[in-house]
Length: 179
Image (cartoon, rainbow, N blue to C red; front, side, top):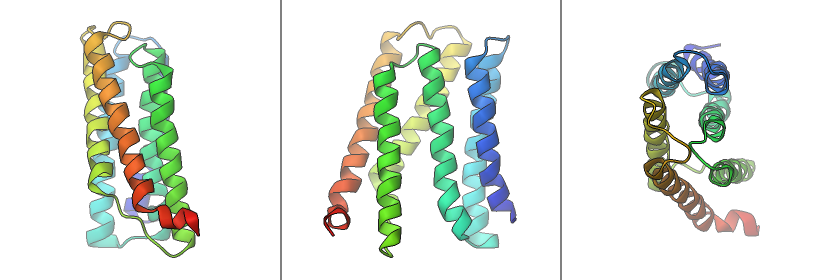
C-alpha cells in the first residue's frame, strides 16, 4: 500500500475517533475532536498531492478517497445532532446528497465517464469544513447552545449549498440517468 492510500485509510480511523469525541463527554473532548478533524483534513490534502505528484493515482484511491471524506464529514454532522448544534433533518439532507452524488459517480464510472468535482462541489466541501471547524470552536468556548441562532443559520446555509451542489451534479449529468 502506497503512502497516499495509507493516508486515505487513516481518515476512516480519524472519523471513528472524531465520532467518539463528539459522543462522549470528557474534559477536552471538543478540542480533541477539532484537532482530529484538522489532522484528517490535512491528510486529505496531502494524500491527493502525493498521489498526483509522486506515487500516481490508484483505483483504490479514486474510490476510497472521496468515500473517506464523506465518512469524516458525516461523522462530524451526526455528532452535531448529539451536541444539539444541528437538527437531524439538516444532517439527513447533507448525507443524502453525499450518497446520491456517490451513486451518480458510480453509475458514471460504470459507463466509462468520470465526473470531476465542479465548482459547486468544491465550494460545498470548503464551506462544510469551515462550518465543522467553527462549530467545534464554538463548542470549545461553550457558545454552542441548543441550536443557537448563528449556528442554526450557518447550518442552514451549508445544508442549502450542499443540496444545491447535488442538484447541479444531477442536472449536468442527467443523460447518465436517462440511458
